[in-house]
View 1 (cartoon, rainbow, N blue to C red):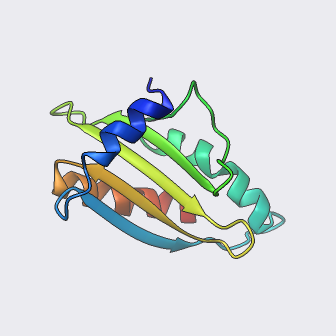
View 2 (view 1 turned 180 degrees about the horizontal axis):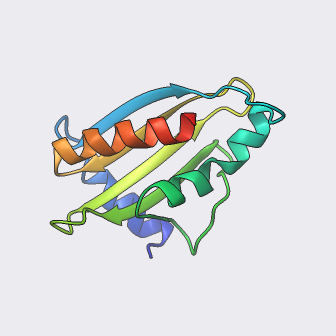
Amino acid sequence: RMKRAEFVAAASRLQGITQRTVSSFALKAAGSQSLQQIHATLPAVVVKSANLYPIDNNNLSWKSDNSCDFSGKLPASTTPVFVTINADPGSGTGSVVVLCDNLMAANSLADYLKKSVQG
């Protein structure tokens, strides 16, 4: 598990054009769940959907800027992966940011997570 300072340092080294993938999404209210309720569950959805761990001791809550950070490793190569989910609880718009040295894996993971959070 990773501490916030470790995440920030590692993620800052992966900001090149071939190391960063961003995918936008829009949440939609479903059934009796409001956008705010769906927003509140997104960190848990990410953890259930992929082999990622929240930063700072299993903290599955949103930061004050409506983002949540995760880290993990690619299964085949153990290459580190860093993910930030940003989502506005009012509008439901957001993005998945994946940082990784393996661009193909980063693109696949970003697409997978986007589909997971959209339901």
